[in-house]
Image (cartoon, rainbow, N blue to C red; front, side):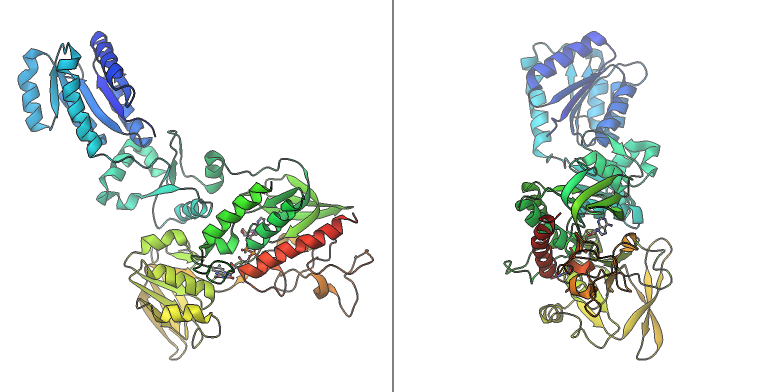
Length: 557
Ligand SMILES: Cc1cc2nc3c(=O)[nH]c(=O)nc-3n(C[C@H](O)[C@H](O)[C@H](O)COP(=O)(O)OP(=O)(O)OC[C@H]3O[C@@H](n4cnc5c(N)ncnc54)[C@H](O)[C@@H]3O)c2cc1C
């Protein structure tokens, strides 16, 4: 943790050097001693310290300075660091001014020049002031700080990215700064730059204005987007449960493995607040936890994880499978696994697109749960994912309304979740209902709901709406290479055989393996596969099983 600062200000360089020397010799081990010969420069320095999230314990200023006197400086400095102890250095002649400053502008102490010997005239009094300061001053948050507004899609995207990648950060909502003087002071210190939201402030004092996830990833470190080598035994596209399982099994069995993930390892499962049906975790575990553990496990076996990085094309050259990445680079491999899962289907209703990220969210929006304290929120959809989200939001929101088109949840949701919902008093189920429109200028304020019973539309207040209405694969980048069904799910194994005939262009003397596509050596697992069971355990199972087929395939390449 950075040491708190003691700042002295004096235009007389001899006095400044003397006070700096005395402070450093006595307090240097615990505090950072800074000095400035101009009050204006010292104020600039304090603004920089505020942006860096540094702590200032003491401000010590000479009273007689030409452009701004010590009292004036301490008054302005108080606006930036109100908790810092403030002391004046005065000549005997200024004693009266110093005494009235104690009364009028809350100066904590004044020292007469010269203060020799400091053991008598400086340190005992400063010790008292600094003890006081320490006692009332808890250590500050030392990680990344994100400044933005709750209703901005860009701020949401950034927070979601950091949360899903397990990067700790402190969120500062500038719209609430009127109630939070510390955020107000930080914004003042940023000056005009404070308008370029979202802003990410790093502990080293640097900042990113109007920042986007890829820039933040680069700066935070720990994210790798470029492959170490150009060739791998196994390249996996997608870091959800299926891809991560394949990576762990592949690498643990000696395959040189790379995993390419567009957003954050964990996939859909990473958005789940509590997975309760995964074997071996009787009290459930959060998707974020599962993802974090799997990533550690994969890395332990030497898997290279490129994230955020996106696969945008595939071609074959002899036995090589070559994956084109969004930044124009390529990764080639002998065996490839497509584990790219599914993405949320869009809700087609006026206002929904415009307010996405500003009260309308696809998926769990785990980062939003805390912001929903006491509010009325809507969860749209009747599957397990919607049920889990409703249970999670019910811990914070005043009321959670689940909107479903059908008569009940029984055909779409697991019974254990239906039971939990029934016993949660602030969750309400609204059946035979669908969203007709989302309303709000800068953020969601109301929704119109079409009730299929009465064919009437009801307009109701809504602080947030979370949409869970099924999902589809995004596999267009594989078109013309890999066979897909009419909804984009990838065909594998027996699904590729039409009346026993092998797929067009297939030249091997065997049928495609169980999880193999129409391109030999290219496999598909998990939710992206035609006919898959959409569960964490089945994705993990398929990812692990496919590795056995990959070994068989590689033994003949
Ligand atoms: C909120 C929620 C709760 C759920 N709860 C449960 C539960 O309790 N129990 C249960 O069994 N199942 C649950 N599920 C379902 C389960 O999470 C999925 O079945 C499972 O995650 C599918 O795993 P997957 O690896 O096939 O795909 P996904 O999890 O969808 O992962 C695919 C990954 O591929 C990445 N990707 C996609 N395209 C590309 C590309 N071109 N380049 C690079 N990367 C790409 C995506 O960013 C994503 O990270 C839940 C799902 C959700 C959304």
